[in-house]
Length: 231
View 1 (cartoon, helix red, strand yellow):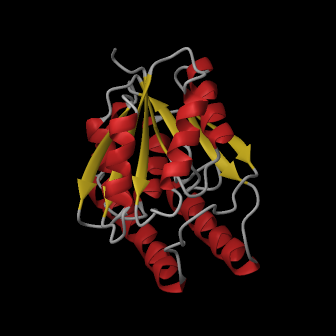
View 2 (cartoon, helix red, strand yellow):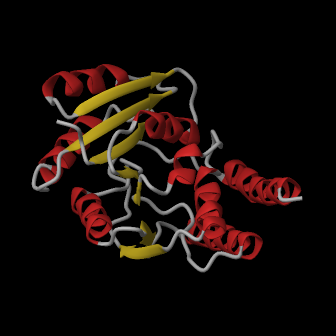
């Protein structure tokens, strides 16, 4: 049966929780009246993530595993987008997304056709992380004239008819800023849904001061490149 919903999960060194998370997602998604597939995009992992994901693939007929030895959030998302077959496409951070939130976002998308659904994480861990996120979102709002917050918030769900979102180009964390800028440029309406369950339930965050600075600089470079291509 061809899936109507494709869920992409980038997996990077998440052996400590990926089996639990994916199993819980499967239980939640099985309650939908729409067939789904889950694409586990294992990227640059040095632990047992790939081995565990392959075992999950054998256990669940709805799971497919992709593997790339190179790390990169955007690279994993793009691989999943290229493989997705559903009419609704979703990608999310498995370390921060609860099964309930994932199911909620997808159901919002199905009942609101022609709209991008995106999480807006209302609470973050630590004052430094909150401040850094605020600065980044302010920068993106200013550069790309965005009317919404939490550029990096996931899950993100969109209909396949928004085909520009299937052709993202970034291999790094800036893929989410690219996603939002395309929505703004193409006039894809977006609905932000508040999410409060944001605590990591496994793994370690790869976001630090250096990576944050790269994102600030990268957002400006992304904007400059878009302006050059626009003439």
